[in-house]
Amino acid sequence: MHLRKRVLVTASVALATAVTGMGLSDVRAQGRPPNSTTSTNVVVDWNENAGQAVVAACFLGGYGPQESRMYAMMHLAVHDALNAITPRSTPYAAHLSAPHGTSVAAATAAASHDVLVTTLQSFDFFLPGQCIADGVQSVEDDYAAALADIPSGSAKTNGIALGSEAAAAVLALRADDG
Image 1 (cartoon, rainbow, N blue to C red):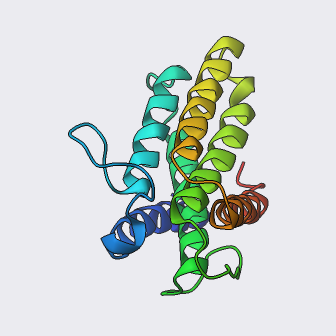
Image 2: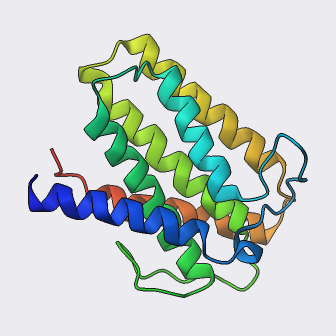
């Protein structure tokens, strides 16, 4: 395995573990009521949303490296966004800052959304167009639902901007992965 791929895979596993273990009180959904079918951890929710988008996009085997890369980049963007809200470790792609009270749920949703949509759309060379459209629509639906659960205001607006900035930094850094 090439060093670059090994680093990306290792970072993905480490960050997925670190982000979900960031302290559940920091990552609890804001505005998403816990129930028997909904996680109270927005990072876990977006990991699930990504899995649903993968199925909708026809990733039914044979696309492991691309799928792994997509998950890794999503979690790296979420890490950088959440680390800007509650600094705990070295950022991966961007040293960001967040105003006090920035919504964790909005930042997670925006970072996840932006990476997933961009990455899914980049797979148009080997997946059928309708599959890509279905995968993107799955992400768009989850994003709309996540944002609808967050009260309007500066916390939400700042979270969306922060998540998008983190996603853009990760996407730019990983643009030449091949």
